[in-house]
Image (cartoon, rainbow, N blue to C red; front, side, top):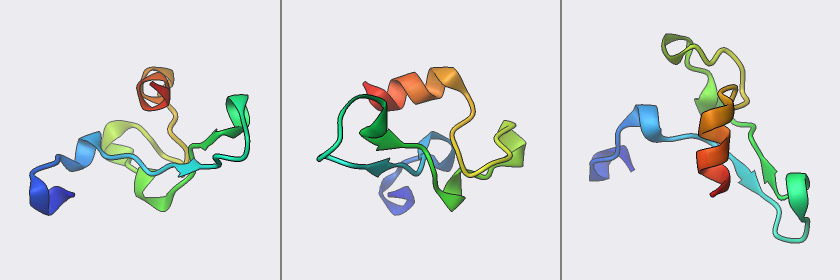
Length: 56
């Protein structure tokens, strides 16, 4: 995606589980989410605003 012009700061790793619903549908867990420079120090997406954008 980066090679196609996307900025790394806008890319987040998630897992989708189509067989589940509600809060279990999206899992915010990926190694690419560890970004100390963006104040995200875990494998999850820590910013609630970004999490909401991903859900939409």
